[in-house]
Length: 413
Image 1 (cartoon, helix red, strand yellow):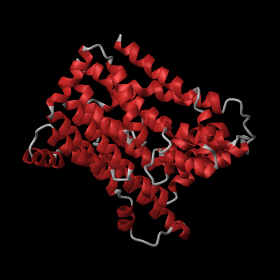
Image 2 (cartoon, rainbow, N blue to C red):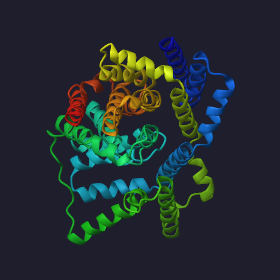
Image 3 (cartoon, rainbow, N blue to C red):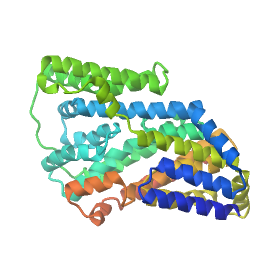
Image 4 (tube, one colour):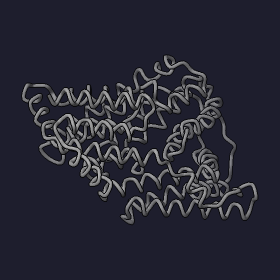
């Protein structure tokens, strides 16, 4: 019976999400249905919903992600990001290195159409490297997403650590080889044969000025990371520092140049940076997790499959594909599979490995999904067909997944 209720619930979630219903609402509706079909009453479901809304983890997660979106919006609105990119190329002294890192740096900010923001940068640099349009599109996507495995301010990583209840740095250390592999294989198959064009020479004084400019314009991101890494501040407190620094940079800029003056109040700009859809998504994900934890029959069913000899790794791969490919998102897989799979781990170390397996498997299916918004925007910008883009992934993605399998096997042994 439990497999039937899971299929019905999953079907409803996938259907609603495919109709552009917010994933948070979709998970709430799917969770309610799953609970009712398994004999839970309305009062029990309502209590779980109230518990989810009042839970510290849910609240802190929603606040953290809200502050991340505000920081990204301010850095875009105040032209801080643009100047950071200009300083980066001058500092690296290499067009190839800049085209590798630029999409990643822009990808650290949760701004609407973020992939589209890095397209002009990649296009301009790619022209100097004589790259084809499909290679420029692949570069924009591969290097933009390589950081998703290890960036501590990534909402997906923060969400996964909260649901999985494990240390974020333990998870990042485990996934570091995967991120490095994506950069390495991306460079080998997309950039290695390119010849760097000559770059304007500068003296030592000019070079140090460039380093200063990069640090200055990237300081909102840097201070947010330093607050977490060195000062051990909560994510949301550390992000407040980054937001305040962005506002301070703009105040300095507009006092020296009127072109940086924004004709609206700082408060209004901050409000525009809030994305209610992401807050609803957090609520839905946490609610579904609590619903799953309330239904013991799910874990009994999974144990029965394992007792029949079905490898857990195969179950994870299939389930990740079924969820993440049609939804073009990692988060639903985390919301659905983490509460089901992670409790089966015999210890903390194995739980981390299961989490990595779900995360990376979901990432690969999300990355190649034709509904992946970053991919849609990039293809549109570079006027490239999806089949031409996929040709650039033939070696990169399988090799990345093999690295993940190697990490999994070595750590499991």
